[in-house]
Amino acid sequence: MQQQIGELAIADEPTQSVAKSTSSTDSPSVTKEGPQAATYVGRQQCAECHRENFEQHAAHGHASTFSEVAETDLPDIFDQQTFDGGESYGTYQYSKDSSGNLTVSLLADESPSNLPLQYVLGSGHNARTILTLNRASDGVTEGIEHRVSCYPNQRLGMTVGHSEKKATRDLEKFGDVTRGELTQRCVYCHTTTGILTEGRIDRLVSNVNCEKCHGPGSEHVRQARELKDPPPYSVGDAAWDVESEIQLCGDCHRLPRSITKQELRDYPNTLARFQPVGMLRSKCYLASNREMKCSTCHDPHQSVHGISQHAHEQKCIQCHDSNDSSHTICPVSAEANCIKCHMPVVPQEQDIELHDHWIRVHED
Image 1 (cartoon, rainbow, N blue to C red):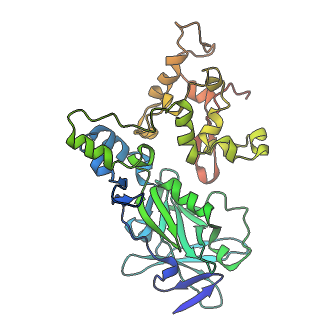
Image 2 (image 1 turned 90 degrees about the vertical axis):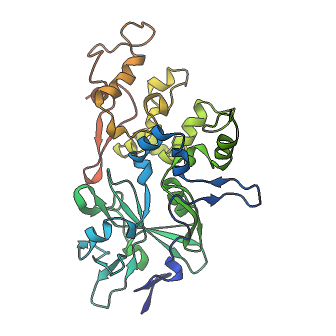
Image 3 (image 1 turned 135 degrees about the horizontal axis):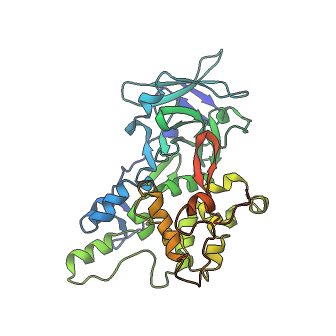
């Protein structure tokens, strides 16, 4: 039985308006039309020659940023759970069917309608948030970022940023609704590639894999297999520089241009989520003749959670070496506690903790 809530057709079974994607994880995806089209070959192809990077990346949050809900443990975690969404929202009831598909309904006096939970965004280190797609009546794809997320230790909680929101139409009772380009950006930043088309995702290569940064690899793979000395292949092109890297990372991790002027002035704690914004105002960056970049401190293939604090601090000390008078030497501790003092943890909603990337001397 199908019911209508706002512009979303909600049914006990998936309908065209909430259809699954037509491509599977890590499957090749054509990016241009024609016989010489570049293609995404999938990270397994990269592993043939780049085994160490492949294995490091597998433990990185980027490797698990986008999945279909039915392919995860979320149906078991949410099944038969209820959650109070707050005033103007109501109480959510979650149910898993015999095929492992998860749905949510709003408990009310009238018969509840079921909304399928389609995709999960986030690695789970901080949170996993659910996205459902809808083809609106005007043909534009809408995304519903669900009001309830899953946090570590299988804890259900309010999605970060939702506590102050108010539902103004029926569909928003399930979560924050975006449409068009905003929804596409959400998918773009959590996948290697994926194109929203009439309520579904075409040409989907899930997660932020090798080819998200390096580009489609089919020609590189062909050359590596056919040529004795294949040309080098890396991020960007011959004009690649520090600014190019910052733009690449900041495309999803945010740059100052995507932050309001008031936020840039006030620098609220929530800006710790957007690391390039902090780094670009740090004296470390400004005094480096703008040569400091994300990979100065971070190996893009390796998860920061697998690196000790001592190893991170060695990155600081390699510049602020007490034997090198060209850099400022910390008068408090030249060998330890760099991060604790200059990049402290900033508490966020739902017990999430992030390091402030505005590297500076804190007054308190």
